[in-house]
Length: 356
Image 1 (cartoon, rainbow, N blue to C red):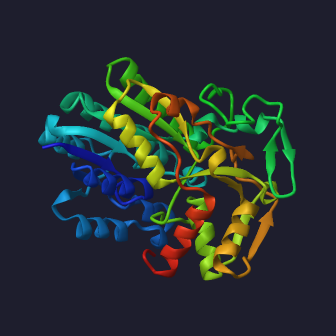
Image 2 (cartoon, helix red, strand yellow; image 1 turned 90 degrees about the vertical axis):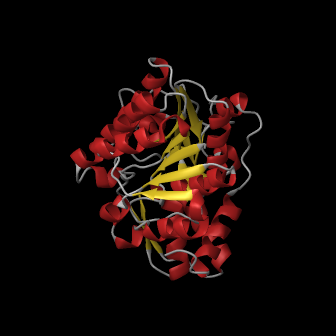
């Protein structure tokens, strides 16, 4: 019996990972306790997603209601499954830098300590399994804001003379001497732990530093899930607030299915302590203003929004991931879903009331 454990299984990337791994013939155990509703309120609850996994996947999916900080519960699960575990996909997190400032201890305990609990369980009970960690580009802090940027009509853009202009920011960017936000700091602590368990103990750990991870399964909220929440506002007519940079801040967006296919490539041929920037790259990116235009086109109605001068602490003005390193290691993987398709899928899911 080949088993995969997916933490945060009710979330965007977690639920996508569950479905994908079941299709590959694995039995999947999902770990989730709906902390997202605690972070962002009832509208961001992932209960609907977990219920759907249970009903649609049958015996292929088993749900384990637990907090990743609960060492006793996590050890019990890993001990039960033992060396049948071939992969651990760790997506559970406190994901918002705004929210982290409200409860720094909670944020750190989930993002850093929870990751440590999982790594120790991996080392003790299934050391041959691949470990995929969803990190974040926030580990680089606000260092990207020091890049030479030019203001254009609808976006900020990196000067064409810069070596990162063509493909985006690569993994050589420093994570030091920068303002991360407390969320960025807790994720960086976890990021380094995952690397160290690969480099020090030889475990098959991979760090995926994502940009904006998105798709129709995202329970977007104002403080997290930029594109999904923006589209929800466009469909429902709810006014949207843009924070800073005139709405010209740029994000690359990767569809959760493309991301999970990258995870699968790593799981099939894992490396120890590897780090990858992963995102939509030059293939799939937009500014907030450009995203609003895409939503207006998809919904055929005007979008209500206001722009505030105050940017969020540690927020990036321009981020596009260079995915060249991952593609060089796994040449069979490529991005398939661009911005128009992503926005269109989220619009259709909301119109079908396919999700809250």
